[in-house]
Length: 210
Image 1 (cartoon, rainbow, N blue to C red):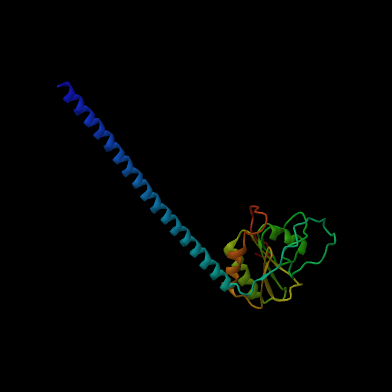
Image 2 (tube, rainbow, N blue to C red):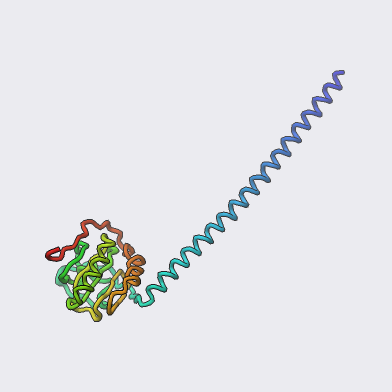
């Protein structure tokens, strides 16, 4: 009788152990299966993200085909009035600049290139227009600048070789007349992309009578 009971206990113990092994194998298989699906979903997510990023860049590229790139000339600070090597673009897109940038906003006057290069370093987009640009075109530029606000500075600039130039760190977009779609594509692509991410406060229209 004791032998039978002992045999039954051994049988149930072995069965319980076998059931535990089977359950553990099932659990491991489930984990592998779930991990596999998660890996597939992660890869698909990365592919979707890559595709989105690629087509977004393509869209920006198609809208800004006239953008010019100029290799950085560095970020050296110089004292006001100090001489320096010539800039490699007109207007400049990098290089030697004064210690203090200008306040962002809309101006009907000019500032030195050396001061505004510091704005570019902070990720600002500089809208530089010839002083003789028609008033209605200037107002269109001002409305465009206001629609963005921060990290935009708009000034007149006699030395432009075209009526309107959009300037960012290392990039230029020149226009004879405003193409708002192309201008917005440029601003969206390069605003806030300077080598220094400094917060910008106090944007306003500084023009007289505004």
